[in-house]
Length: 108
Image 1 (cartoon, rainbow, N blue to C red):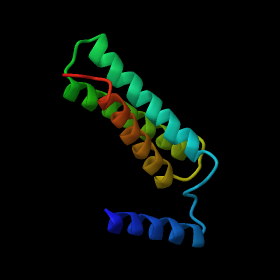
Image 2 (cartoon, rainbow, N blue to C red):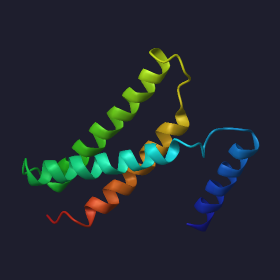
Image 3 (cartoon, one colour):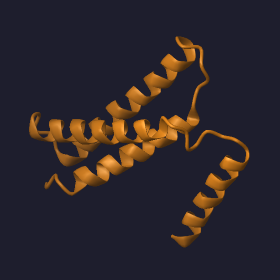
């Protein structure tokens, strides 16, 4: 575990030195929106649709990641900005955090 944390710190430090936008202003929005959408869709599919915990996790992850991909496609093709892999990484981090929160709430 310590080795993984060290690698993560080195990657973040390297990206800051080379000017990548890993800690930009919109990263908090990507993280928190993905976390909220994951919690909302997982909980909704479990409570309202009666899906199992595993199916709810798949549905929540799929919907949230699809929205993140759609947002990056919109940025690239409509707004003529660059595709941001950094935004997608923060989306995935938000999804993981949302799944961790929902995992403590949904009992099978």
